[in-house]
Image 1: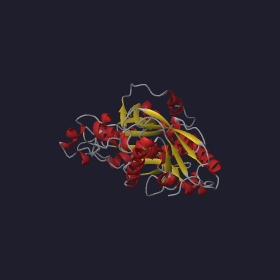
Image 2: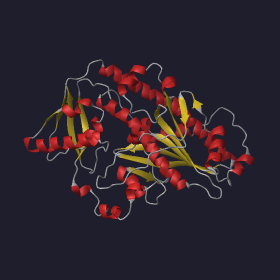
Image 3: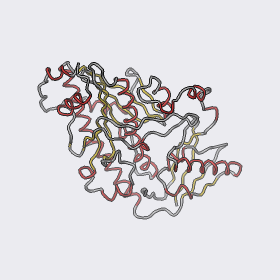
Image 4: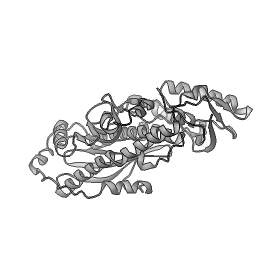
Length: 393
């Protein structure tokens, strides 16, 4: 896979020191007592084990939202000038006792979730690529994440959103593709459950599915952000890489926002709706359309500007080699794989630093490369940050 080349510059990266002390005591014995590697999203400890081992956290609705996300949430809650269709209370009431998820999906796809919205497209029940899930950060654990297969996912259509950026996308490779239908940079996922007798799921399970899928959306967008930071092309703000998710039934819906803060993926509820209440239903429909507007306009524009910046800063020349300079006592460069996972020169880069630590760092690089090839990823097991310089020539 080709990646955008990067011009000569210096870049300061945040690196982590991997130490045995960062591994939670007793975690291995706690997990080995049951077959946890196959634990699914419906498991009561899925959040505290599987998700936690991948640095994905569920935040309570009353916790403080980062200030930088507030303008985006204000955007989602804006009023719309278009008239609101009348609520079909009879059909909506039937969903309260209907045990079939397909019935719930059919109703809301018709009235709330459009197939197309400008350059944005809706896909349904397709597996998202497993490699787009956040990487495991606790390598003492054998827990995995369930591969996302959202009932609905919205993302960008290649032909509709990027008619003038075909060559830009070919240089990026395939990491922005979410599924087998070539959906690019997804930003909005919906999971639905039925309410009636013998119902097939709960909103707890749907929320766990949202945690999987929305963190994958953020991770895909973060990869472009990392390339922009690496090439010194542009600043990338937290709202630019955020995603939205809805867990819902025929009578209730919960809207979540997901974002990445430092090395952690976080999801938090920002609105809740009783769908049989007309004012709530109207607000729900309005917020869905505002999210689609945002994904089709402001968010798309940040991606287009990023592609233009990369193309302008990179030019047509690839750098001849990459040199990594490090210093500091026992500085283990765990951050490398996260920063350079799409940089082809990483494998042959020259590493320079204090002689007493050089072999240690070289061995670490070999481990990271092996993990990269096995698609396991790098772990960030400690909270100690140090400075490093990347010099391209």
